[in-house]
Length: 142
Image 1 (cartoon, rainbow, N blue to C red):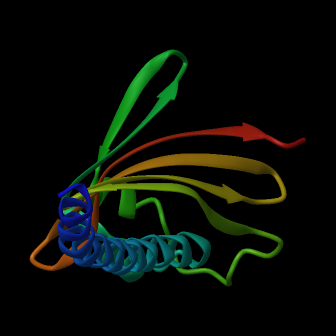
Image 2 (image 1 turned 180 degrees about the vertical axis):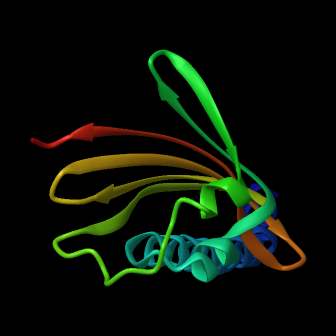
């Protein structure tokens, strides 16, 4: 009887585990694509790429002089101007955590002068992942 129950559970749960793993991998790639667009836009000042990664309701927050500063998407995009790709700089994803249609990601952007740490809240809307919220900080490397 125990063997029968074990075999039943093993054969019914194994396909579910496979499907969950497959979905997680696909979702992970979608999130990485969105963050990659953000990194590329940030490095080159390309607001089309930055905007593609960010939902229209996105809010961006950081701290200055112990006060929280909040920017809406349009204001944030206005800080960027097209430029040659930043030299000796790059972005990396430190961690991604996915729960259904929502996720969080810790990312770093490093330039010769600063190390930026961003925490993105990300949501899947109409089949695509968007950054919906960002908090960030940076430290000088000099």
